[in-house]
Length: 106
Image 1 (tube, rainbow, N blue to C red):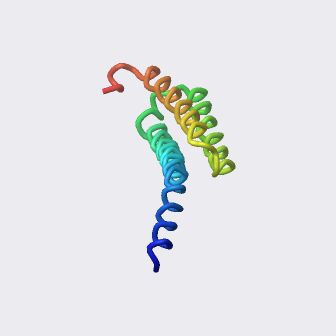
Image 2 (spheres, helix red, strand yellow):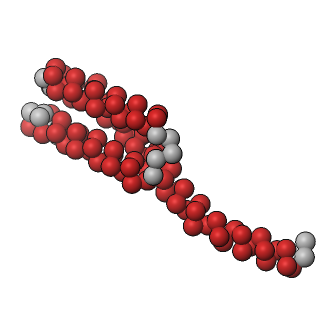
Image 3 (cartoon, rainbow, N blue to C red):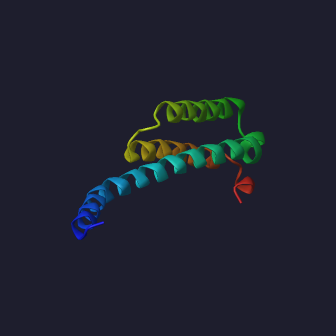
């Protein structure tokens, strides 16, 4: 490979570096949302399940399921959208925690 070809490849790599970093951040946000969906699902079944009113549990399960469906349908969503969905689940989790008797929160 000539020095000119090497420099050209380096230039091309540098041009794509920013795009690659954006894609990496997007995928991290998606994976974070996915991880939190399943974490909240498990907590709902085990930790919170017996202490919640059935209607609250049903509402939480519906919100989680709608997020799963959204995630499946939006595999190329921007990072910010994944973060918005994660915030919605975080808010849901906070609500569930506040509904727990104080002895169950510890």
